[in-house]
Length: 263
Image (cartoon, rainbow, N blue to C red; front, side, top):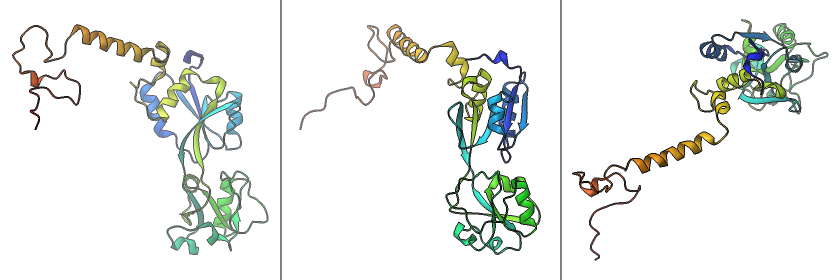
């Protein structure tokens, strides 16, 4: 594994809709001497950015080509349909995809959803980007089905969105080149997985001791301590001033004292 000294800073890419601020804040608290640089990257470019080494890791949308990239799925987003505020869909809390059958549903080239069958009627041309599609929705050309984070990212006062109950969902993951799993990447993995700064699963523990060694040593130490220091209440040849039945050295689930008389 490459040491963190090879990277004076940590470069984190992220695709539209992902908000990395929470993880960045934790990074700055734990590693204040290692600056983190954020790179906003399009969905079409993010994997090339990782492969070229222009970023150490990135928040991406699945699927990920596992041939040369590693990935940890983080969360799944709600899928919504973006509509004008005066559209009939705006009057309901949620909508099934089949209820969009009579509408033109835009399908941008950077669509993040894995459709088996697209809902609604297709437009004459596909918009180049989700942002372009949003403009077309505002112009009354059609509707757009996207992950909720993208609907929020491109929010407009004249548009709203509602969940689509049976649409495919987009999953966000942390990805990085498999052959460049550096110490800093391991640190960031620990942060996104919610490990505490003193977690025994952190890389510092893993590097200082071979796998399983710390556990076996700990068990051996417990046995040695048990031989050196008898359990409270256990017979030692010296009076303890305590009734045997109050001792705490008995195996769990057992009782001491007089045996019961058989009936």
